[in-house]
Image (cartoon, rainbow, N blue to C red):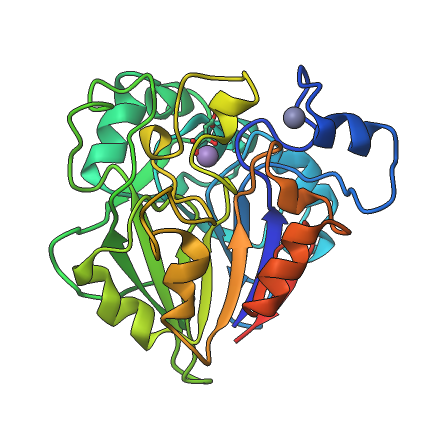
Length: 310
Ligand code: MLT
Ligand code: MN
Ligand code: ZN
């Protein structure tokens, strides 16, 4: 399979329109080591001109422009995107759906019932799209382990895996989490035999997640924050990483082994890549010491346009 990282930043992107943190100022000034990024999304292909879009970011039109292979020219109106899978109902993962309203056929949308509920009530994108292309929904099961495929990409088998993270701030479930508010994906290519585990929003690697993580060859996971108090310390928010459903890279004070770097250290021999990186995260300085730490632990940082073959 081929995975194309369309957007490697968390909500807000990099730089964020109203942010003057060190990182955002540096990327605006064109300082060496800082590269702009769009908001969180990937596309997956079986090697054919067909693609599955995973999350539809507010930057989708720019991302499609920057990724010509998403638009094969087979008819006057055409797209390589066969279906859209959503990991959650967060603004940075869903609002791009509105930009795809010109589709010729109903949009094939794969979400959990919890995400569907948010997108038909708190943020009613689905009823809105009914006035345009329409939506054909396939509910994703969060209890069964049954893999599904998106035709015609039958050699890619996908499992939705419920995760601990958070429903969006606008959701009535923000503080009363439902199973299915957030999922990860296990994508298996039955031809190469390789598996990729994708989880851009991950608050905890729970015991039931371990077999999935163990089974994957590539881990493409939550890289939002370096420290738990990053937003608070910088004066941008009162929310800690856990309040937002994200596991920071470094350990919590007095909790050795709690952070993403320590967690990933438990799985040697896998390719490990961070994605969904917030603009406050010091790993956005490609020349900074945090990058050396990641490199010592064999952890890569994704970037817009990155290709992952598995
Ligand atoms: C998150 O995942 O917490 C988001 O990036 C927040 C947002 O979209 O504003
Ligand atoms: Mn997000
Ligand atoms: Zn910033």
